[in-house]
Image (cartoon, rainbow, N blue to C red; front, side, top):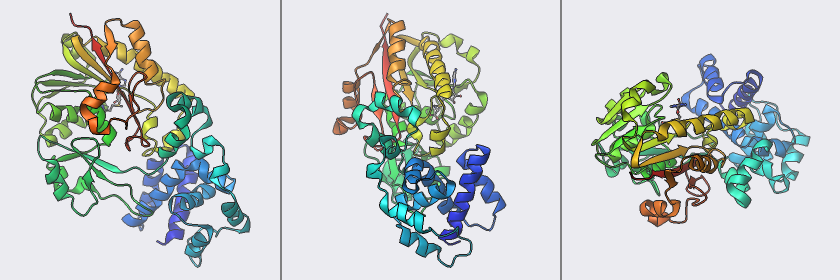
Length: 429
Ligand SMILES: C[S@@+](CC[C@H](N)C(=O)[O-])C[C@H]1O[C@@H](n2cnc3c(N)ncnc32)[C@H](O)[C@@H]1O
């Protein structure tokens, strides 16, 4: 397929998403099933246009002064594929599968309208209702922070130190652009792709099948590192899900001590068994039923709460979620987080730690939750974020946003997905 056919497919998929209120991944998958002639390269390019259009939805709409799928897809090419109107039209010329070429009015809009003149929320590609949430989080930096959350993400891997070294994995991935991450001790980064490119399918690599690495954003690796799990500890991963953090904790503990991996949704926990086996993690016990946690009350050195959240820190990877999120959903998450913090804190032993993590950038899900918890739990206190960060990431002392109740990672500052981390210490007996 040439660019024109790919662009037409992207418009069709964006239309389908809008009409049937469905996530991008689902609409892309369905399109692939009903267009089996499209090769892997075509699918990747179409996916890139769709995701770029969703990441830059408001900017693209602004450039064409329209909110149609056509405007978004053409806008994606202008904003992320570095193509001007003439270049786009020349690529579509003579392609019978292409959408109509840009007309005079569209070309004029594209060449005369500038994002420099756009309202802040447009330049930030942020829903209006979220603006108070992000100004609360980032103050004057909010436009810059949100703009970075609308860029293409890298592909990050965590080397499983139970099975391999970073050098060994890097040498297996030679030719992919893989290089050590800036901050995470065991992280490897393959930079964001350009234009129609695609990341290598690392999960098809023999090294992946041997359990040498996992796919995990560097931010997720950093917060797992900040939790401070050590060999011999008793640890409860209270919201373990498919076990991304559990695996990182197990490696940090060198398979010594015990991790109890719990999640209230049994099916979310299901993939953990294969992942543990592949990684050679032997100090993890999955506990699906909350009643099985009873004997652990007041016994844990560390309780990790990787809380259910809006996921606003992952908008680079799931840009459709940004436009689907509602205030009601945020309220539900806030209630869940407060409830989980209360319940999970009961498992921390005197002198032990509760690590609170979200992949959200909203202060209401982060610092404000910590403040509310501390206000009602006098036997817990906040571990000072600055020394906590510096003890592990001294070389990058000024990168994360520190203070005000926790540690905030963002694409603009740490080059990672958006994450929040706070450690709360229980008073010794
Ligand atoms: C952010 S995800 C966890 C991701 C996982 N820790 C990882 O690193 O891959 C949050 C998880 O919390 C779980 N959850 C939601 N409510 C819960 C509750 N009341 N108790 C325990 N887990 C809960 C969800 O099922 C979901 O799997």
